[in-house]
Image 1 (tube, rainbow, N blue to C red):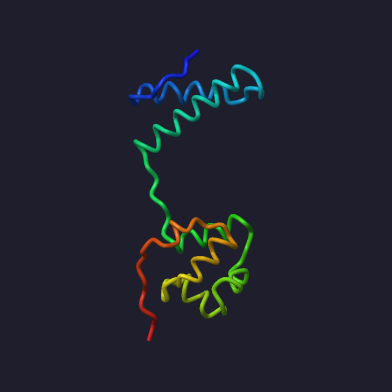
Image 2: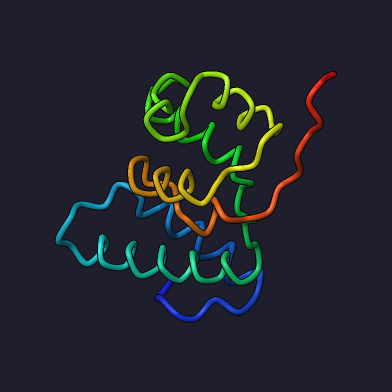
Length: 126
């Protein structure tokens, strides 16, 4: 049994992952479950430092939030506007406005720090 301690090396990391896998079905309010929670926190901290995940660009985030919540582009009308405007935004032909960013954050819960990131636009076809 691995006692929780700081994860400093890849070997420590893999040992912690193996112990998490072993404890994965631990019952709540048991010492094993407490150890699982501590190890999970330590692994998350190690991964954030050594394997950071880049934030998605704003359009990818919007599409992910729609899909993960079973929503369609029509559900964006109250936030972005007409279907034409929605299509232009999602096709990267128009940038998000500050008002759109605020509403996407407030109504869909998309983190504002993701939505304000710069992203490339594509020229509209002539």
